[in-house]
Length: 404
Image 1 (cartoon, helix red, strand yellow):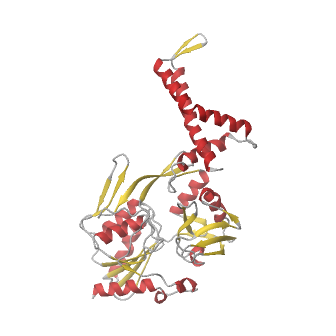
Image 2: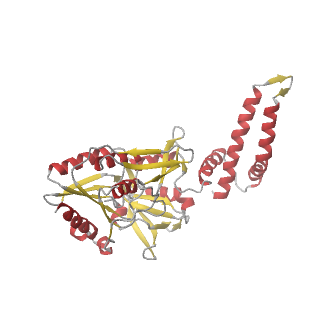
Image 3: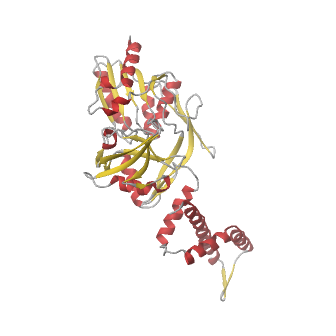
């Protein structure tokens, strides 16, 4: 359904709602024979309403009478709901039907079929990869943040048809799907075949690098991230870690509450982040005085987004960690996710966030203290090791200097 048509339908939804409200309030007035007596105030409201939305009613009638295909009421209603969010022209605000909302919630926790990738519509009406999920089919074939999906199985798609693209990409585990990818960093277009699988997200992984340095990989901020992060960090410390490399590369974000809790483990008594909304419903989030007694180096890249950037910004502003890698994604707005009825739901951007030093990184990202690009040859290796990861090696060197 074209965006312009959806927007018209959205306004019509407002029309229907207001008309229903009018008649409900009117019918509880006074009936005189076959006539209805309403108040002058209600009558004035109706006149104002008709003057404002009468043209939309005319357009709606014309579409229903002349559009070359039959349109079911359910399709119109769903289109109107989607249009209310699309008219905001905000890629992060979206109405989700039952299937879309189920898929979204599955991607935040649990196991689901697909290729293991986070997508977002960008400002150029393209389907942009935020990040692949570690150790999933998308990650193993070398897809990276900022890649653009232009076609699926040969059929073109853009941001307006992203929902349909996602349905095709998910598919049945064990079956292939072909994506046409445009990689801006190389100005190249190529096809890649990916075999779908069951995606089981392992949010936190950790291991010792040597007798005093640990490595902790945080792949997203789901509902259990803080608890797992705490346990893995304590295990590393028990194993002798005096410093830890925290890997936030390709981490697309997640729950703000989990991010704040993790930051609390890493900072002393400090401001973590503050948010500002349109209606003055601003919030500040602080850590307490207790924290882990370890040194930190944080790895970031263009796939480190949202909650990853909040954590990175807090650590950088308070000089609680050295940031190594490349500039982060640049998502500085906060969404709420709410169920709408028994099966549908929506995301809505309600505020923007600022790092402790007052920086909003939306569209900009956070620049690391030490910038180092990933060696492209890394993605061509079948079984890369720590020694092949030049960004990790730099982080280890920096952590070693801190400890010494």
